[in-house]
Image (cartoon, rainbow, N blue to C red):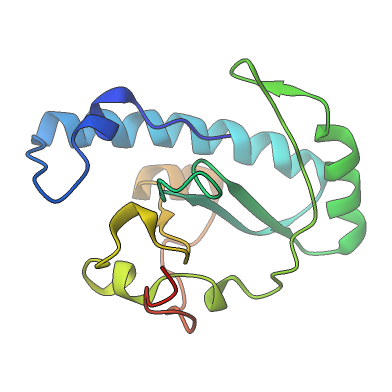
Amino acid sequence: MYQTPNSAVIQSGPTAMSTAADDTQAQEHFDDFYEEVYEELEKFGRIEELNVCANLGDHMIGNVYVKYEEEEMAEKALNALNGRFYAGRLIMAEYSPVTDFRESRCRQYEETSCKYGGHCNFMHIKRPSKPVCKRLGIRQTYEPARGGGGFGG
């Protein structure tokens, strides 16, 4: 669902040479997306967690994971979102077998950098900026990853 701006994709990789302007523009683009999606998903119930993957692998690129306070809220969102379009792309919502996202986050990515880069099989979660967190009333810190350290790549 999330599409990284072209400049950020071009700048990724081990030889990347991004500038502060590129990073700022990419974060602003992401913040706009995150805020829009959060506000839409919040219509279905209280959100416990909203994660957007920064991974580049085909099976994870742009994936958005939302965890609601109650299963009924997730069911309402699933039914309402399936078949809709976002940015010209069909939304294919489905339930995830993951119940604790700490298990699926890449510890290496969160601590420093993952040796598998964007093609790691553990979630590289892109975070909204502090001002967006404040506007949405969500916490800015997250519990440390307990899952893979990027070794499943």
